[in-house]
Image (cartoon, rainbow, N blue to C red; front, top):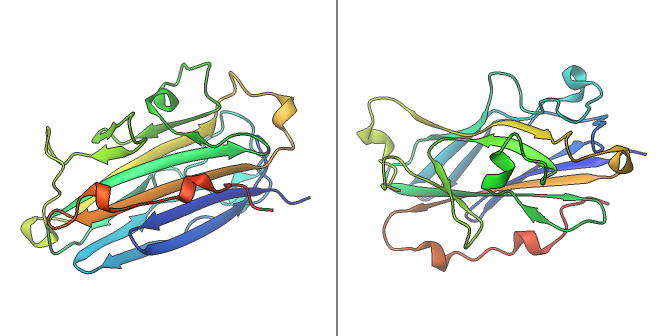
Length: 208
C-alpha cells in the first residue's frame, strides 16, 4: 500500500504543495520538489533545494538523510522592497498528534523527538507562536530589497532532515508520516505578523 510523505510550501496567499510517497523509516516512493517561484506584490522569493526522490533514495531507515546532498531547502530573495520572513515546521505520524518542530528538534542528541533537522543559523525559534523567525543581522529581522544587494541573497532554511533512530522503532514502520513547512513573507511596512492568520496545522497532515 502506498504511503504518503507530505511536503507543503505555503507563502502568504500562494500555496504550492509537493506530495512525496513514503512510509516512516522505509520511504518507498518520493519525488524531489521542483523550484517554485512565489510572488505577492513586490515580495518575491524563489524556493530552492528539496528532498531526495525514490530513484536515488531507495529504502530509507531512521537516521538516513532526506534532504538532497548539497541542495538545502532555502529561498532566494528577489523582493523589490524590504521584507520579513518566518517559517513553521510540523510533522505527524499516522494516528498521532501534530507536533511543531522546535529548537529541541535541532538537538541531534535528543532522545525525546522523532524527527530531527538542521535549521539555518539566522533563524530563531519563538516558543510562543511556534515560528522560526529569520534575522538578517543581529536583532534585525528586516531583509533588504534585492536591488540594494550586490548579489542575490540566498537564505538556507533546512540543510538536514531525518527520523530519529534513538526514539523510533518497528512499531512505526507501516505508519504514514506527514511533514508541513510553512513559509510566510511580508513587506516590512503596513502589515504586522499578527494581521496574518493561518489555520494550516489545525488540519491533518496525513494524506488518505
